[in-house]
Length: 303
Image 1: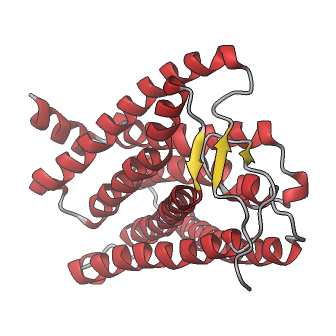
Image 2 (image 1 turned 180 degrees about the vertical axis):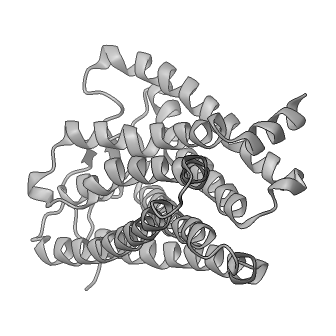
């Protein structure tokens, strides 16, 4: 289907529909962005430089932090600059590029989280074969598959969205995202929406199901451990990842698993704040607060 898009420049609403709140929101999100970048860069540096953290779990965590840095940097700096300068314009190409990068990074995070669940499951359920099963080649293959799958998934969604003709340039969001763009389509977008919903549902539900199965196996293994100390030690190794899973699926997936007709711009912006800003900010805290190895590595990094 040829691209009949008549709009060459879009207008982003920004963080709030209330002008008085725009600068306040920008100042708040700037502080959050700086904290998130510092936290995630610290994790990347600690895992890279500390040989004690050269394990599969921390390799996945390092790439998760890289994804979080890139994901926030794809949307937030431009929105902050636009708010301060009062310029809401974004070109069609820049909008498509932003959507492609954001969806790619979000789906890559989904695949990485699934790989981390498999890693924790194998470490607890099959500890004797864990080192052999999760060797360097396997880990690199899982990371590469996550990035490649993210690229393919994003390419589909970008093509599916921008093959529609748009009648209005006003995007009711602070970055280019699929649901608000679909609402601007002139033509009937049902087929595109169905295709996007099917692809998202297949990927999200498959990853979620594999993650749940991993944790069912983990739980079944933990309850068979006789000592309370042993059970606590086994569960503590995956508690941080479980918190990340709940954050990711509790905020991000809901935004892409509902029909466009039920999409609310205000709820969409609120959900985006959680899954695109707060989740990447909280991940470094989640993985460092109760992780003695990471705390030690961070102390050696900065002290």
